[in-house]
Length: 82
Image: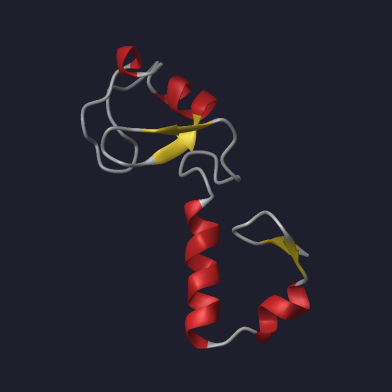
């Protein structure tokens, strides 16, 4: 079983039955829910000025070593976090 974009559980068999645009829409929604750093569902979401979402802990850990967005390399520092 998997999770839909609304948090409801969607049985794997139902996912397999999706066709065309519905399958693409579900795949895109699920991708948007994943943190690009840990590849898990985003926990305590943080949205950067450049529009990328991360788990708050993932982005704060990343910014201890680098000063950029992991997705687009736009300048980003810990002082820009709440």
